[in-house]
Amino acid sequence: MKVEAIDHLHIFVPNLEKAKELFGALMGGGFTDTYGGDRWNSWNVYNFSGAELTEPIRAAEPLGGGAHLQTNGDLWNIIPYQRHRRQGC
Image (cartoon, rainbow, N blue to C red):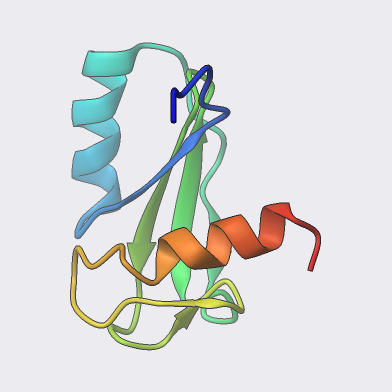
């Protein structure tokens, strides 16, 4: 399978403010205001270059109403969730 384009990336980080500094320097572009909170179980910002940075609040609980992270940095369960959501299910 050849990837022709990527719409955007979700990047899970331990510290949103430090990640904004790093990714802002690497990717350029600006960020949205921080959004999310307890109901989403995460704080998030979107970089206009195409990345959403997410800092989970409580480990191993659903994020944004869907995906579970078993451990910090575990994206295995995120990938099927995103595919499932894109297919409109």
